[in-house]
Image (cartoon, rainbow, N blue to C red; front, side, top):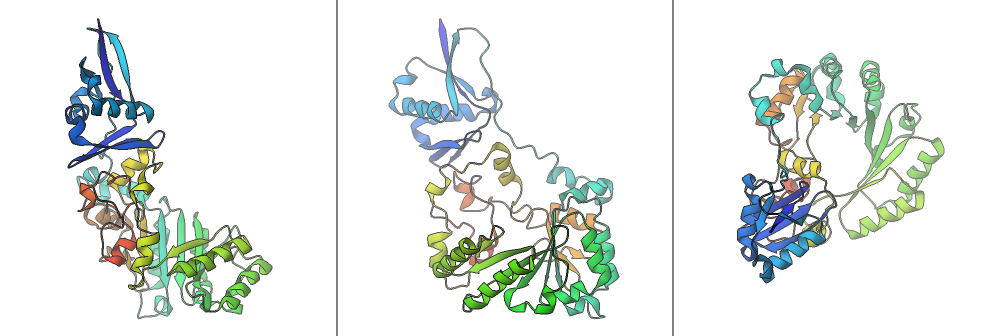
Length: 393
């Protein structure tokens, strides 16, 4: 006598919200949506951890039209399979994908930053430093304090240091600050608006594969002649330059696309910006549709990551000209550069609003695509809407 089992693959996620359900195979990126009520007993049994993703089927189960279609979709998407074996034999089992948080927030909360020590520095991956004239005078924080703060990052996992200033020459002329950042084993970028570029700045011999990358921010397309001139100048001087196009509408997007293609700007980034009166542009071009999330191509680890942390903000700190340190400029500061960096990271990991800002709020928590959708971003903060999508449930 034979028994038939429906077994779900261990890389497959099953989510149910209200009456809707979604099965997603993180190994091949395939999945399908279903109505929970049509297959409720089977789904509830599969989601019961004691069954370990394998449940027996009765002889008449495959005669059920809805269940038969459900199982065919499971096989088609390779999210599971039917297994026939002799009755009485140990049933097959699979381990459902479960998020393990023991090395994250809960563990950190039980220990102090002193006990966690240098391990806290491994969470830091990107640092943005805003500079202006106050950085080096008595109205701002002392330069040596900033230098000390940067030197304390020696054992961090820092991958990128961004310098932002209206007058980059202030930075390049500050020998100790310049040399300190130059020695840091990370990509180093200097951001400047196209209108702030001056000939004497471009003559500074600091841009090379071993030095700093110049990132030119273009947020005004009125003077196209100047934009072309600057791009050509970068090519002529062989400056390691990247371009950041800040666009407000489809017309500016098309202009940016033409510039990227014309000059083969491989390091270019096109970023929409919310102005307060271009919501329709965002609804048409930025908001997600259900079709966008049909095949998100997220692997198992990426799905877990969306459940635990914000992929847009995690690991990033910002230092403002007054010395205050932020996980995100829209939220209160964590402290200043006079504080221990480990304590600042500990504070964000246990009390912060940025690094662990996930889609656990309404209406996202009621949506089956909750963990397939990208992490909340600056767009949600600017627009004042938690979900930028056209999806219901």
